[in-house]
Image 1: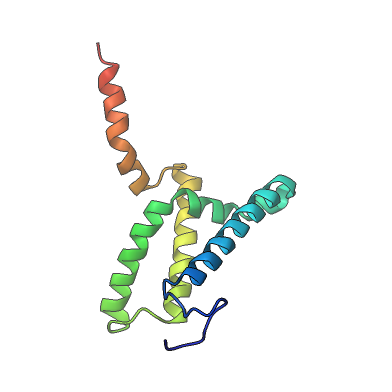
Image 2: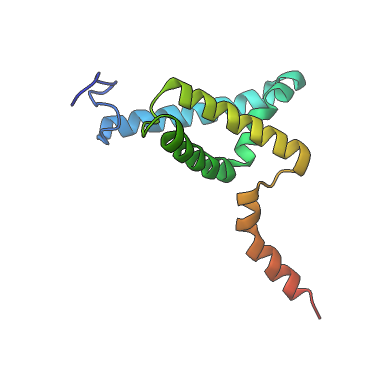
Length: 130
């Protein structure tokens, strides 16, 4: 496999058992660390991390916008490639700014989350009609 070998002898994205185990361990560690920090973090730190919280609340909307952003960037600006630090940086900044502004101005449901929740909302409304 081309590229550097990773911990456990796998190459990036090779799907091998060692790579999957390392990925799972890193994800579990990040989750445990996040829960631990949430319990002991001072209020100022929690407030400073609000943009990340907002981005997490609008995960589906951010995913949809990511696809739209990459299609636009690759078709209009880069001539078909999206693997540059400039594209990644502009995508990340744009998504975090969008999510933060949306949650502060419109509330915790993004446009895609609202669409997903719409059938449930409509069914509850129809059940309450006499």
